[in-house]
Length: 357
Image (cartoon, rainbow, N blue to C red; front, side):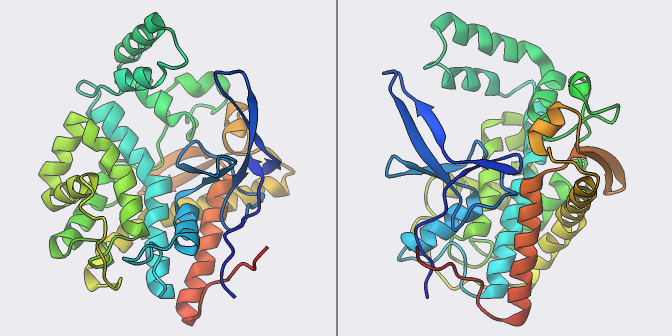
């Protein structure tokens, strides 16, 4: 029985759920859209900001891997699936995407707010995006404030949703420099390690898993391509990984559309998987362990709401460096889903299917 294109609908938030997400327009008319995560919503999910897809003007689907699954199930492309059918290849595709989704974002923000702090126009771009909700003078003022904030304030702003400071982690310590859980410049596991590993692969072929575009490509592109708008960071990628930089430019120009081929696991992926094993895997393990310990203590508040109150914080180590983070329930689900996919890959069987509603 195939997967259903109907999904369970609710609005997960900080480990709980609400039944719908209200939206409002300039007309003053109130609308309600159902928030869904294909194929089902879990109590561990948290409704994020991006990416999302509005379907039939009433349903909001979110999460990159879930969106890819929905596209494959409901609107399959003639060129091939985003998530490969082979369980082992599908597991690696999901592993790469989730690693960049959960860990790559820290590195991208480092590149934007530290490396490119003096050269990027992110403040002005953010202000322009608020034109519809701010008066003209408010837009200009907002852009000026963001430009004047400097790299330290911008870094704290971008990381404060994820990381507490080593000095306490409560609301008052959010203004202090947070500890990101992996040194972004670390040659074995930060930007340098990831770029070097990806460069090896993309020097040999046009896509990470062969000749066709898959979820793995979408995950890597979705993060690294953000730095194309940050001059210093873009120059760094071009210098360190020219094939990767050309690949990012090619996808941005939509030259990947319509590409096809059977996804395969080649030996040159070993370096990328090794970097993920040194960084993403221990981060997920420590987060899940902290979640289980917090639940055992009776904690019920997690994610950003817990961070705002200085609750559900834990200390860990990554690449030999200490960090403090808030427990993230959505990362618990990511890790558990990946472990389930690994079981399917080892057994050679098909993944679990959802029944039709």
